[in-house]
Length: 170
Image (cartoon, rainbow, N blue to C red; front, side, top):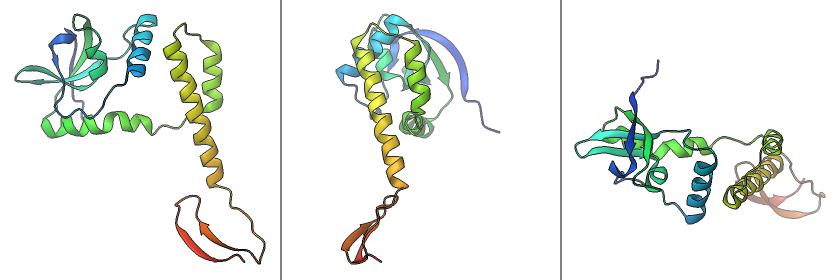
């Protein structure tokens, strides 16, 4: 059984949230533009993850959302985490999501059903599709081994683990 660390859902003025001193993410302007556009078109559909500290609430995840408008009342999930647990969540939360693989066919179908007026969102989604195509190509290439004539001398490199060795092709 996994522990439930969520204490409550509440709304807090964004300017009252303290950034984590351990936040390792930086947010480029194009990311800010995309998030503003999604919030304009859809609104908040996710809570900022915070923990209680002596100074109030410290952000564990959601630094960018909290920085867009200090006066905005934002949904926050208050979690019961000590310093080390907060660091563990901070360093793993987004990377775990990034490990997901894209079903390009499903993504294309989904994108065919919706439209956005925002250039920032459309550029972000185009980048997601390009990355999806590259990842699919890399997975396909990893399963294909080149064939060689018997008399060709070459260096070999495993397409999966990238181990390199030299020798004559057989």
